[in-house]
Image 1 (cartoon, rainbow, N blue to C red):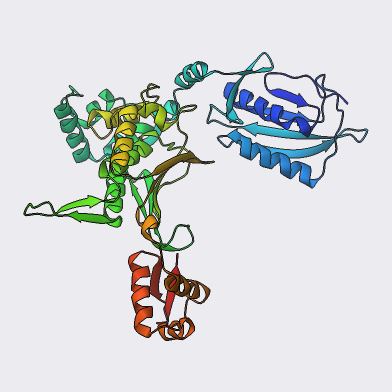
Image 2 (cartoon, rainbow, N blue to C red):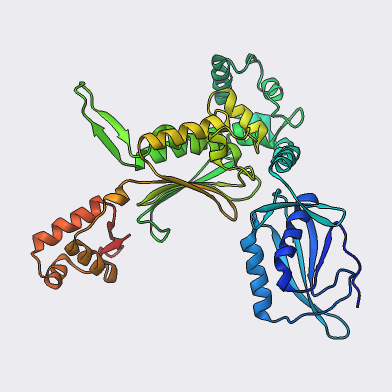
Length: 439
């Protein structure tokens, strides 16, 4: 049986032993065409050679694609057989989040072959696809009459004060059109909608967890607003839920210093909304854990670069949302990506705050690590109490006292320490029963 020939959209591999090359072909085809088909058990000339296929073969291949092809794309893995009983595998795939990498390297399809892209080629390629700009310019279906006009007026005034906008405020539609935020004479484009609509076009999950995992939620609020409102809500939530250190320097008023520099987390929050993929269908999220603060943005970070590349000024900023980024820049909400990351990293270094960032399967995450996690060096008695509470959330202080062989007052003192370190949360169920939740 012969199933044709290799093309710009189709690639053959003789077996799944050659899956690394197959995944590279998926990367190159996605980067050029956005969709394609990969076959295993087929020779270069299209003849079905066949291969051994069982449940583990298909699951292992699917796992390797998910692991090595970034970002995640849509794909299906299926088994087929030729009339003479030879079995082969078909992988159909598609995606719109180029550029895609295979094992950390980037490829582009050229005359049916996979060519490795160097960094300069990737940079030029990335600039050509212009991030999400096609989505930004599309019709949102939302009339300009649904904007928060007071917010728009304040924006124009601030941008003029910054010297980054010469435009004077006249009528809303005229201002929005001059800013490139109208699709036609009536409707906003998508960028204009997420920036100034009063209909809550953007969602951000503001979550506080009891421990270092996502198991127990202390509070959850899903905030809906436009980009500016979501930035403000995120800043207020984080400012209200992290530790403050009070500094006495001899002045009349004491100074408050947050455990994570405000300048640092502001830059990361603004960056998240500046470069997020608003068409992805995934909420933004600000999560506060016992050991870290995590800022999640749906979408991608400009590949193959990292935030450090921009902070070091080794790469020029490449906005994924050029219209949104420009609006945020003009009124001073955001600076250029390089300057923002540079300030955030410098502030963290000065205050000895550790940070990490990583691409996930659906977006980009930035973590600030809290110093309280390093302070929680618990003595053996406290560890024993903590373990007992983990094993039995309903255990009373008297029962703990008996099991540990210490006084009731000692147990109460250690429980107080666990609460202060946010390692223990005590709640009451609907029937009035007290329950202990250990992080």
